[in-house]
Image (cartoon, rainbow, N blue to C red; front, side, top):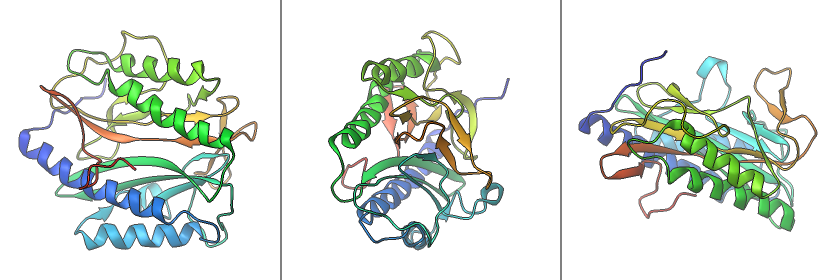
Length: 257
């Protein structure tokens, strides 16, 4: 079993700094989602912003990844590679996953944004995905089990007729972008590591309008729904504290988008 690290008060402050920059980068990316913009343009802006804050993009060159953000359009669930060839169109839904590293710690967050006018069905998928995070967040408290979060996410998503991806999960975060424990978005409650004050986890529902099965394309990164259905993604980094869960990936004006 991998070691779960508990963050000291000083380390938690560093995670708050990283989280704030990450959330601001997510908000910047979201503000750029509109018809005619390329995913490479968004990625370039994210990279420049993160570096302007004295931080580094967590994703850039991570195991060879070519972007500073994962930008995933429509049926692409996660790990979309930014490209000048991917031009956003009216009606698309665009998932942006961002990480920033500063003072030895990472922030990690994601959200799905509408490109212009989208269908009511696509908006509902985005809304359910986002709310499923908050359903799980209620259980991100010291003394709960990791799978209490997982179960709450799954129940909410499936109640609305959608499915949760099972091949990829949330995770611990801190000095490394991916740490123990894994945080699935499915499964029965009452299992997994017991949450303790000082833990930091990234909870990230990945939700499909159709079947939950996905496949990774030949580039080794781009992950799409097997049935071609739309997918949405929402994520924040959470500190477990004695006073309850605290989201570090929040902008200075208190927003999570």
